[in-house]
Amino acid sequence: MEFNDIYDINRNLTGRVHRRGTRWKAGEYGLVVCVWVYDGKGNLLLTRRAKGKSFAGTWENSGGAAKAGETSRQAIARELFEETGIRAGEEEFEFLGSDRDRCTHYDFYCLKKSVPLTQIVLLPGETDGVQWASMEDVREMVRKREICKIIGNQFLRQEAELLRRQSAQD
Image (cartoon, rainbow, N blue to C red; front, top):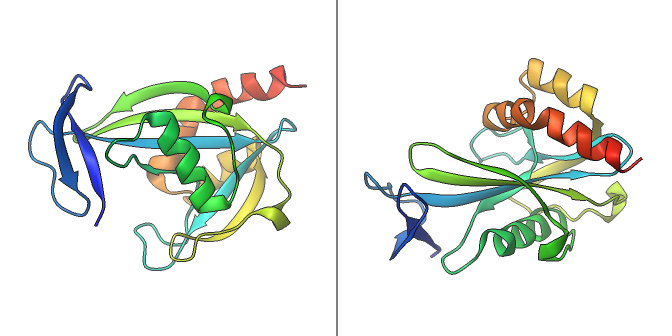
């Protein structure tokens, strides 16, 4: 059984926890973290959502819910490792920004890490495919709805900043 910390609308910890898989009450918020892994050559790492998951068969970046007691950076380092086998120190993640919706606070990161696809370790039941895709390819995948809608919208909002960071590495 997994638990998540409960935050208020202003992202203050309430001291209470939420059991994963149950409904959030009004005024309760969880924390979800996402990372765009980029290789410094204009490509982003995408994983495909496994059968049985919501949005199965669509592509996305790595991420997930922070567990109770985890900081945002601890959560993103854990999620990236769980979903891809990529190890990165918390300090390696570059913060892109935050957002909030009906019951979730989001933190977005990027990470420069060029990893051969043969070294990626997919998490059974979570991911069943992996690819490096150019920014143009990702834009086209969003247009064709091959990327999870939520992640596609996130990409479109963050594309300019991701391009800036990619070009700063050249």
